[in-house]
Image (cartoon, rainbow, N blue to C red):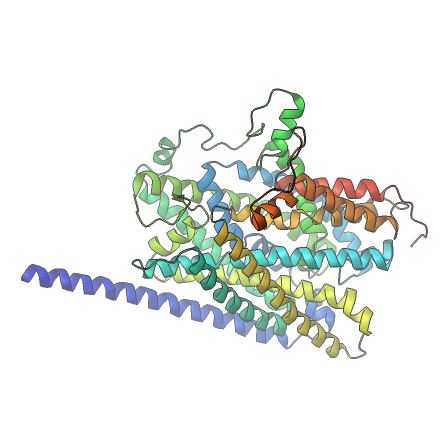
Length: 555
């Protein structure tokens, strides 16, 4: 009887400790969001013009811009998706892409940013009107609005994975199935979006950047703790982990050849183009990816243009690339250590599964909820949600800014009162919030239907289809004086989008999702390219076609 009472008391004590830990987590999350709301309200008092709302009056210090760029890049997608890649691959080949990322920042800092500061643009697509004309500007802006909505909407779905894991951990006897997760994540992303829209519409880009500074500190602490904890609980630390990573490809950093065996030169090239992470993808594919995301995407460039001058903007941009390197290695290390931790050290029957295997996209959220101590776990959850809200807030702000300046003011006229112009941008922010919610719900639906899909592939693939056409036109405008025209540019951009869709097998993939059958059979010689190569392919096709049309009027 005494033993039964002791066991009962131990069980009550354990439940009480869990309740206290979760209560501490909720208190920290609540305090975190209260700070974010206060930042938004404080920043709203200085938004007297469109320049203040969209660019922070170009008064943000470079180190805050640097933190904001990092926070955008280390989104919830990266925070959960990159450890998932490390867990799935058990190596560092994803980090090869950092080579192109850093090279591209040098080009953006030397060419793109000075041009934007020189012409004093708010929407970067105003530059295309100055160089070519209004039709090119509106088409480029429309492509940005579509692509950024898709990319940010898919990111919006990612942090809801953490909420699903929390639910399954607290309801172990009733875990959610795929479709129950869909409805749960749908409700969560709606709530996150509305909260983000509130402080973004109130505080503008200043609120976004200063919340980014706060969240990046939280995320760095979470990454550091995760590495420290895993190394401390794997016998032998890093050396002990390496002893369990002896399979072919484990801990590999550089990969020169593609995954598919080939003997001919064309076969080897096809294999490289069809492989996600190789040295060639790092040198060329990721170079074009970053040129597009950091040079032609209003979402990212708008952060850079908040700096006081082009020099400070360039410093923040380049240093963000340098800081990305250790961060990427840290998150990949977490994924690799998780593969050892749950493979050889701890055999947890509750691990989230996808098609009978551990789900790489949910393995790190599961670790955060199941292993991290109360308090720190709440801080990480708050940080992840805030990271999503930070990148989502900038997306909302940039989408509203581009739409208002490139379309609304042109269609309905520009109000004389600056406050009225800010009001229109705020209303546009709410409108694009609804668009992003719909995209997030669609992503959750696809993930529920195909649970083994990679997070990184979804996010990076979504803008790979169209950003090559944007980058191609910007490069023609920046690097030539007499090529490209109002007639040729739309033809070139459509050609770039169609080429990438065919090279990535998009029509067949969509048909497979909708009907279960492919539309056509590709020839044996036809290459199917992976996401790091899509923007490069679109850029080359777009620029090649646009160069065939001379600029008729010097602008």
